Length: 171
Length: 346
Image 1 (cartoon, chains in turn yellow, brown):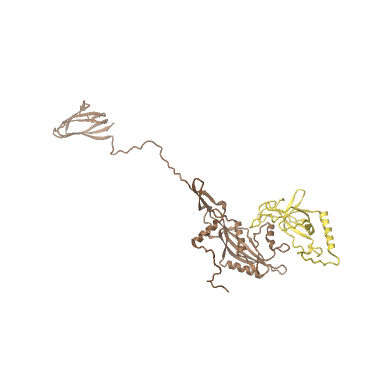
Image 2 (cartoon, rainbow over the protein chains, first blue to last red):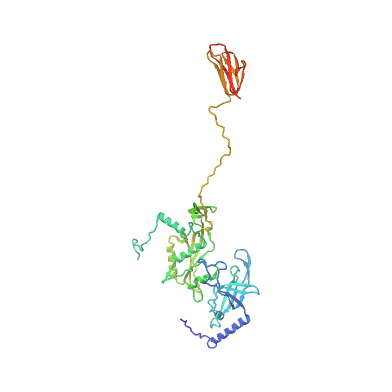
């Protein structure tokens, strides 16, 4: 059964669905056409991945992925932090998280859904890729920041943490 | 209303075993569906056992619905949590109370089970079973040995996250009933492992400007043990015995002990009885006769093989098969006379 839809009437004196669509289209034109920050989504295939029944873990290289999907987003990589690796007294420069925002439209067009635990690849230069694991799946996104003036939400902001190469190193 | 004690709520179709039969049954559980050796017990088996215990023994039903447990110990692989919780997630993909989670404290300490603590040093192997073998020619046995299990204490925090006090109460009731005797048992690979309720605490979020929900934490201590199958030992028992003994390689016989003793020097008395004044003796040995003394003899003459040797000589040399003849002149002709000699064999 098709879910019941209620038209949004707020802001309707000066703003409507056509205006919203226009703004999104212009924003996407700027993000995709001008900025062109490209990421690759490695979505974990929950059906094909064989997990153990205690921890839900798989062996190294045991996670099965769907076909990688390229998408565009606004990208921010946070500064690295110099600190001890836990209580081990080993100093390391912990890379910063990847925070990226994606238009809902973009994901709908590509028919993908970024889930908790999916991996993201990002080319930091011509030859080096860094991988991240999604730790904040950006849901819900109906807060004011993610809506267009309170009209309705139009993008997701994900947070992903860097992963070591022994966890994931591309496919 | 409670039923009188004499009324049975159900009739057991299979009679319960007691005594020796029960002990045998417990042993069979350990070996069931496996080899003659017990199945190994590792950390993951103990964790699985705890999850099974929470799922089966602490099952909570409120308003006809089971409060779902997260049947997984959540680790660093985030997507695993996603796959486990999707059944009770809301539209935004966040888990929807009520649900129960099991969190293991990562550190596993040396166990406090009194029967296993520091009793056997150096991982000594102990006899467990003797299994008959047949290689087509010989019958034998394999001896199965295992070391003493290593005791471990694992702490689990079982948390109920819910929105209603009624759900808290129900879960609390089930736990307190289950642990009314301090401990309960979970069944892991044929072994009964005790679980102790250590503590109950509340972590509910009741801030006025936040979403409110209850979290109650039940801290359990599992007093388990580890048995590593790699440490089990199967060795062939004795099927044939070969006995070896050492003997002397000398071929000469031991000198036989003579009886009576035959010394190479002995007394030889030559007697002249009555009126007899002559004696003839065929000697079958070579010897020197030494005259030590004479009795009733004035003089004597010695002949060997009828050849005159001499009178009153003190030493007579004779050879084998010589004929010794002695003539004597007695002092008193009517009495016996004796020549005492010592014969020394040559």
